[in-house]
Amino acid sequence: MNKIYINIGSSLFMGILLTACSASGGPGKSKQKEYVTQGCIGGGILGAVAATAIGSGENAGKAAIFGCGIGAVIGYQIAKRTDKYVDAGKAISTETQRNINTVNLVRNNNNKLAARITKYKTVLNTIKYSKMSEQGKKRELTNISTSLKKQLNMSSSNLSSVQQELKVTRSLYTKYKRSVPKDKSSTYKNKISELEQEKNILSKHVQSLNAMNASI
Image 1 (cartoon, rainbow, N blue to C red):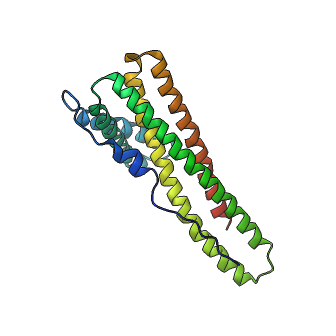
Image 2: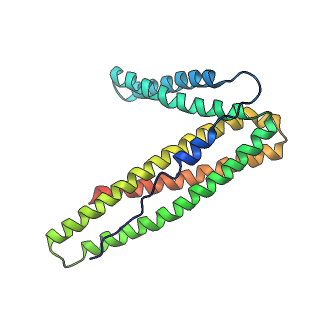
Image 3: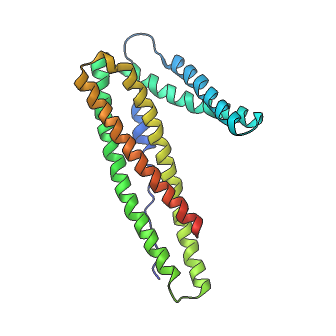
């Protein structure tokens, strides 16, 4: 039986969504340290509160550290992008175009991932009802499981990157929306909503991959 070969590729999102945020040095004092500090504090508090609600104080401490790290990263990205903009109009137009590009990227990935998931299901079903030996089935399932885990890890990483991008772009929308004409801020908001929809689709794909991997 032909083995299923999935082209995992490199991360589609981390480089495009985050490294494109290099600051070009907007006017005035940089806010990077301020945003990093605020993000760390906010993320740490939320992490600790969440962990305390479901676990021990030790878990809360670990979650606070983790939350601080995530918050600091997001705060740093907000600061870098904020520093690039000379005014609200430039910020809104640039971020809107960025969201358009990101939505297209994620949508394209989601379409390809949906096709891969269908292929996985077809192959798993074929193996299940094939007349090959149990040893042969086990060998084929092992190969598929290896590919599935790689795809799952990649897709989970991509999902995390999209979630982070959403947090950053929502913060920038809140920062600038009242400083530009309503039609421009509305367009920006709509693109954020589209990205949210694609994120939800990607999340469902990750769940499907998880379920298939668990069934092997």
